[in-house]
Image (cartoon, rainbow, N blue to C red):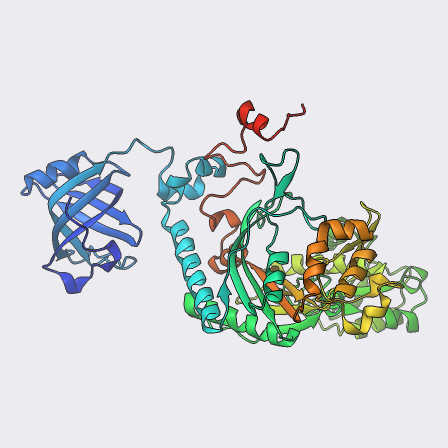
Length: 579
């Protein structure tokens, strides 16, 4: 074949009369009695080829082609006849009259056509992923992903960061999700772990004096999957020395601004910043969607001061979500009450304000004056509805937060646009009912809030951390923190987590030892690249922005993996399968 001179989308009206060579897949073929129309598809789009019998050789070749054949075409660019233009295509005002055609590869009839892939079962699409990836809509996601990566690298290069690769074979650590284990042939019975994060390595790079590090890192976590989670995924991993938390947040916000500006020509508004407590109390979530309406309202003080009904008065917390300009039917109100129970609330009271006054599901126990107090506290306006939950504080807030989101989605009141925020001051520890011990809310290398260090031994669940998350439209995009860099403080944290000195030495001795040789103050963050691109592309699943993803059960239909291996391979690493 002759060398390709142009991509489909590059051919414009300015090239009419020129001879070009294009190559790609037959997207669609139409035979109109003496004329053969071919839509040729390449990575950039479509261009129309129109063959006439006068060019016998090229006409004969195109008469043989079928959908998904790979062909090369050389011919003259000409204008489409008036009324036959396609304004949806960059090349929609021109067509190519072929003088030479080469069929480079014939194709069996595929199990589905790329143009129809949206309606095909996902398992079949993943089995034939190379066909699925021919969808122009899917290809656009990967063009966007490439733009995002270029913008990320340009930003970090401009700000003095070094791109450093860290090992993919590391040591298994006791914190976080389950590790993917890799047996060692040279050390029978011992294992590497695929990294859940380059966390320890990037901290050691700070000890080494690299000062500013980043990496587009592949990481692995053996955990249950969902639409926004895969067993292997990609992080934008970052670490910096000698910077305050505020400086880190400012720099990472600037990075995201450049990413959106360079890849989508979008200028982002300033990011909101709130503490974990403010997020939980205001939205019932540590990753609130700011597009879904106003915050929740705390009615506890008003109830304690004015209302005598024990169900409310004796509750630890009373809160509500206001549904503005919403006059639901009794059936809808009953549905909200059931929804509240599914989200963990013990029950729900509703109050509706109409032109005739206030009506409620608790009329037997709340007086007109009680209702007025609650309506005033919630700033209830005409035609507004108030959903009230009472009980323990955090479960009640979580239930109200879910009701707030469901209302915005059901009534199509979720605002358009990009609403970023930083959430800071997460708890340093959580209590694990499963393990019956304290665990790290972020990871064990997170710096505690300086005002709370003395509480580590006496009241650990009250200790705030210097950790921070980036949230976009209700989805967590990144987590980070300032890191512990003093050996004594790091040992105290390990002790609070239940690690005795021997276990600490065995698992993390190398890190604490490194800190004894001059460790700078440092902090960092890791962004989920796949999740970021998924949101930017408006995709429904991570599988739409990862070239070769796994199913929800962690299976790869294309490669049929995971799979059995030869017993000789197991013998080499000293493993016997337990059935």
